[in-house]
Image (tube, rainbow, N blue to C red; front, side, top):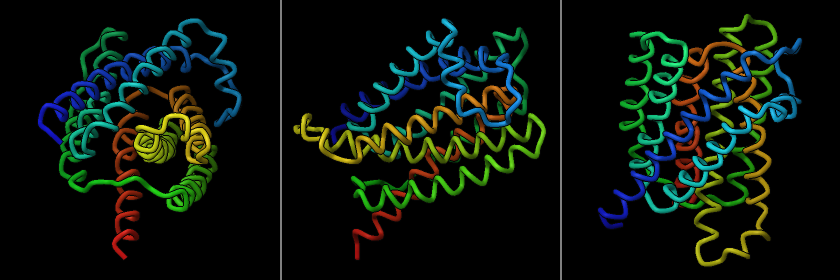
Length: 250
């Protein structure tokens, strides 16, 4: 790929991370005041959809998703993911401004560690994954999410948010892997993608990831949820990609 295409992809990813940050702060501001007796509320999206401000944040999510999909379709994983991870810094900074406080040193450290670590960790690439590989990744994701959800019921709000960050990061990482695959499949065959099961896997896994994310927002402050979510999302995707590459090489 040419450097101009990579630069365009990085710019789209940066714009997408900004949209995600705005959506994160907006939706967290609504979700944290949502009353519920359950640690994990499956109906959280239905309840939040009644709030106009949350719906405004949803518009930013859609914009961020579209920009991310295009960036992933154009750019290399090693270029795009560290840029997308900057949404963590943007979100924590916006949350601090909303709460009229300074960004804490621990928040700066967590953000820089995530972005810097990803720049090294994401030195591997990823090809289009088969249905079998994505299905296996989804099954592993479901098992880990189930474990995190069970554990979350036994802890207080801060640790619960951390566990939802872990589960949400794994779910979002699987979603990203399917996005990359569906984006490649749809290039030149836009209608054909509707006959591919991976498109519907994307919808199901994406909805699950979003539900976990909103429950994480509801549990505690953003600083408790976002760092784990931000580092595990691309980390899980790269692990799935490495497994696919290993299988393809056999």
